[in-house]
Image (cartoon, rainbow, N blue to C red):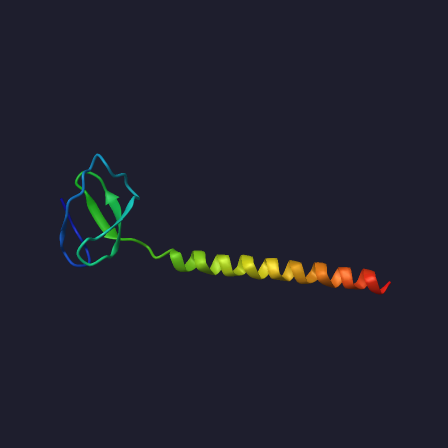
Length: 81
């Protein structure tokens, strides 16, 4: 058993089924939690890395768009010659 650091609800966690760094969610409040300790089980609010991943995805899409624009410009230049 462990307690949710957000709402203090008891969460049944089998220490043999989880590893340090695993993420789970609280069934009571829905908070994303990270296992920070195994014996005894310790939980903490999981870092919110999703926003960073979304930003990276947008940057990657922008890079693809820029590359496509460059190819189109080169093709137009070749046609003009």
